[in-house]
Length: 347
Image 1 (spheres, rainbow, N blue to C red):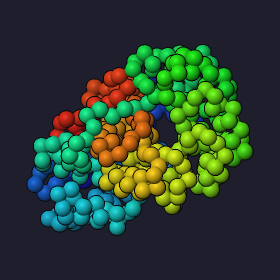
Image 2 (image 1 turned 90 degrees about the horizontal axis):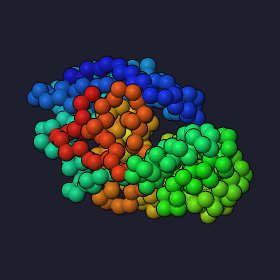
Image 3 (image 1 turned 60 degrees about the horizontal axis):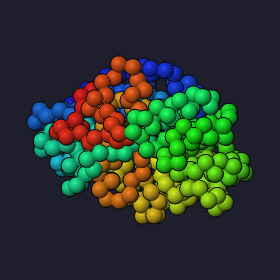
């Protein structure tokens, strides 16, 4: 197998404020993987250093190692989905954000060979549409209300509001007033609170009607202590990367991400582990490009056919300038699962 690599840069239409600072652009690594029979598939490595601590340079080094071992794996790619090739890459360098690119490309190849979308390889009855949430990031009441009202008008039935800084109570109230009582409202704290502060804040904000609070604190034991003391459902995101977190039973729901799980294959395994604890799952993007979002949509469509799936945080391509999102457009609060062979999008 031949692995080719190039860097891509996506520009945000407006700067995005995250727990790790302000983002104006998103750099990723695009992978083209050509099998011995000439079929090519595409993948994406999308580390986000402020979020996962992995630099683009570290991911590129890992993928260079993967390219070397894949070239040596000629004729020994393993099964239909390239399990042998992925295992060889894992032995060379187990960095999940790099393995994700290879895994996506292998699934893309498998779908193209079969003439079927990846979701149809993962499930006999994948969801035709994956429900997604809108994200409200405005730090003022008027801005939050305007963004929430626009999302409601576009057909979203779930909104995620970034909190943990500024006038949280005022913005929560403004969003609820703008959307009405039927809108599912979840809060994302990015681990900014202490246990005591989380308990206090969740109690104060809960009368607005909250679906869940994502990552109110950071760490398995801290999450467990918060969960024991609040009536609102809590979810983990960043904490999910910690050893043992997926099976710890410390949250009511777990946010999974393709890059962090090492690709579609790793994400499905992680979801099975989470569900064994009776927690719900949902998927989210960490501002990947079209390939990463498409992979998450296919995985979500398969997971939704096997059990409850909460609204996924995959409506992120619209945040970039100049990105053609037609294949993954949000319509009435959902993304249609691509029907084309493979991942269904081009880099």
